[in-house]
Image (cartoon, one colour):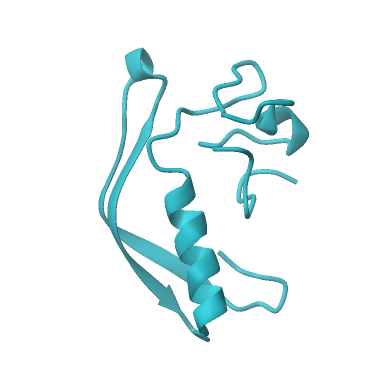
Length: 95
């Protein structure tokens, strides 16, 4: 991920897998090491929350609303499919 100041970060997961269609392509994430060029506690907290917020979520697309947002479809609102929870903190696949 890259923020508006061009600082980059990424996460390396111990386990990352995606279930099959029968489980709505649920994403499973266990364990994470966060890598950042510039690290401050607030940034680390935000990124940790972002990278874990989507674990165990089902894939939401424009034609299949599987997020937990009560008042809308995150994939439609943010123009991209993802394992949305109640939408997002960052939007890697949308506009």
